[in-house]
Image (tube, rainbow over all chains, first blue to last red):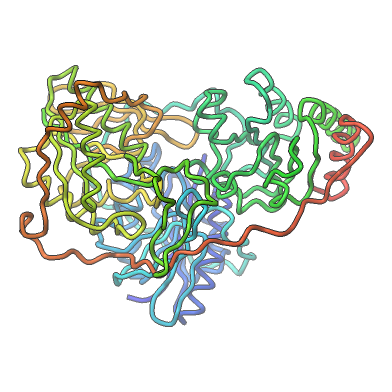
Length: 326
Length: 263
């Protein structure tokens, strides 16, 4: 066993941007270990996603393209991943952390008796073992763990690495998926109305609200800002616990981790729990009443004041600027 | 129906981060005196769900927890809520509790209790946030596993229908029993222990099982904790956009982001 295998992830038929971040992490690791970087992709009708991953610095891309992979069922993803792993026999397997990989990858690792670490933010080779860093204790503490099995698997948090620059295209090798019978049957697949619009895990811009918004009624400030910017909507844990928005909107240590180009935090104080979810954001903008709020330490730009007054003027100006552009 | 719920005792995640300190060994968390340990939040949801199934189907609920002696407290709390029986398994706890080790110990304990139809685990623990034990345990036992689950719809004729949270929605799936589910907090609101429950829990006998009782050698961790550290807070400050009024500041922010090519 040698080699590093990076799996891309597909969301709504498209290659998830985080796949290219994981490819960059994999490339760094493969170079440090002096081994080959392979790519893997599991999906249905995923030729265009495969084209994008084939130029992500990998020497060969193994693709398990099968109609049975949508809707997602863990057992079939596991079978496909096992088939791909048999093809290239890697020592290390890396994947983006998603709602799906949070389920099927630990199950795969269990089956293969592999060591696994979830939601890693850093990955290094110390000459002997792969060592990962992952936030623990709500993001207040960082934990450094060394793998203790021959096969080592990690899922990476979004934004842990800059995406890899495009390379020459590598050969694509189709992989047949064994015809396993999944032990779990999907009866129905539903997209929540409340989750319409851009997804947190792939949006270029995310607008999030916290308690500083003041009330559930004021949440429209977030909705309007997001609509004006074509942004995904996020929220703090406190807001989710009050029931202002569904838990699928929660950004933070125990919620979704996001890595947009622009993250606009409105009425968010910046608890470590929340900051742990936006470490991968490129630029953070904060609007908050409290000049001492921690969010102003994480943000690049800030406005101190009442969101109820600032946000409508901001949205109005954004619309004007966009209209001028068009 | 016999339901097993696995519990992890964790430090209260609402502890202010400034109160967290790393021990001298660099591998343990030192908590301020008097800070209580609690049942991991998702595990409390799993207990509540098991109790709802108990009320509906007349099930028996066994709670298991790996840890040091203090772990009995969270088992007692679950019994206070209405669980029938608790077993303490001596083993690692906290951030050094390797998922493989915990799953090996739990699976050995589950083989020792009466045959199990359903295992409910919290989807992940609030201290490590790893979310691996449910899958490792299911693999050890050969059970199908679904996680994170936000609703148990129905149980009949040897199969269960549950709603699993997906990215942006849910999928309704059927799994045959015995099965294991990773429970998410959307599923319910855990009940407090009743006064009668607390009295029962005080008297409840909670056996401790060690490696010898479980007939196993010490399991080998898959991940070895090298060190814990706290990153110093950032010294940088945001560039503040100031203006004569809040409205003007809002407009100025939009202009700034536009200049920077961000919107």
